[in-house]
Length: 367
Image (spheres, rainbow, N blue to C red):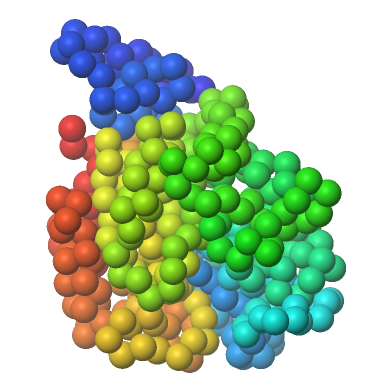
């Protein structure tokens, strides 16, 4: 823990004790407002939803790896780190898993350079596609860590699948726990590789044991920032379920600083709970999927977490859309739709949403 964060947490504890109440705890320290998380001036971390580099995307960009990021390349490279869900395996090996409708696989020859080019600080493997081409392809995908692309959420057995990632991003010590409630057949076992699968409900005892254990393990290193990445819920749902909402808040109550949701293929609302952002679903960032006209699954945001002077300051929402299997800055029409959509979806959480250029800003440093 940095000296700055230790001092701020102690100050917060004293203030709350004097006030006569406590809204929660991080570790053993009661907190009210967001804790300070580092000593740097400004750190910007990007969070996006599904990045599916297989199928037509794989064919399209094999000879031009950086082209998949389109007009967003410079913006992504300016971040201190990018956090994403990797919605495919990365391998040239394996055979399509029987009984599956969709199989997503990207060749390492271009996918690894593409992910490294934009400074991928974390790629979640806790999803329903990492085993689409069997155990050999899973083994190759797990090797992304050796190529400078940190991962979590899958492993050679259950213990390693739930193991938190510990990494340094922009001067911050960051821990990441990655989980999924999708495709139980892909779940890691005590003696078999797979994903960090659990029923993501705070009332499920199995979840409380496995996820609670992973969170405790993450907190042992006393990170500046604890991120929980969730591949959860049904496709095409625009609102998180009551169970998802209670689980997200349960995570924050147990130390999560950012809840990063994905899987529905469409954006959902953003909640600020005890000063921490809950991105219920970040939508799709790169894919080749058929577009549903009323849902606009080709439109989403780059969610930029701004950490200013060591404090969780704001979440900046940059509108994007998928065109020709690559991500691009959103057109004026798409950006307007996205602004209206996220305001409407975040309204039930009483989230403050401010206009910020073509995008939006959600303040986090207000108590």
